[in-house]
Length: 253
Image (cartoon, rainbow, N blue to C red; front, top):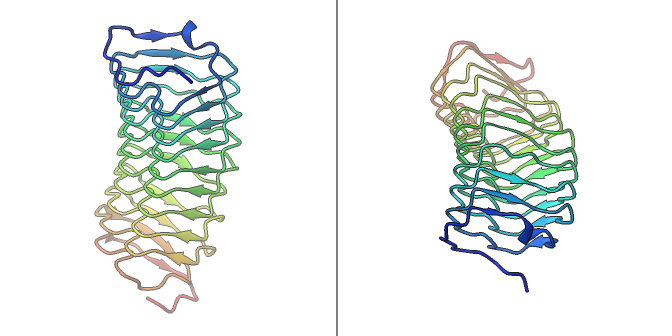
């Protein structure tokens, strides 16, 4: 059985040699270790368990091993001092809420083997302004980037579905250019993004959820709408439109 350090309030601030034989950190291993500042693991570690470092509010750096394949649900949730995370290329899975509330992270590069981002994966990462998604990512979970106030620089080249509230309250997004790969935008996906000024939606999109642009109160200079866009419940309500371009085949507006 693994030794865990959950709810450890001792002055110990660094764990190094004591973790060198670990292959997988168990669930809740360092939960609520408020004094923990840094962690170093051997390259044999391949998985971080559920809530392994949740609420480690002093944790600033984690040396993630090169052989890491999986980061579990809520793994780094509310690690409010975590500033930089280097995710190795072998990682295939980022669990639900794994970086929820990590308000000090400013930029991230998602490993090239990751195909999906879990629900609330980066929710309320207030200072995250740039994220680089690889071509392999085809799915963004519910509320994945919700509350990332400063997020502006992002592309999702092969994402097929933008889930509910995925980018809700991303206040600094200026231009939304939906990639050709997207076929579905779900409920409130971009709601309350206050500074949007350009929205481009390609013809490939066939499903628009209710309120997908609800509450975008900035002055939207241009919005291009495909033919399949219907007049569903509050899809672009409360937008201060100054320009609108409809497809030649749009008969629903």
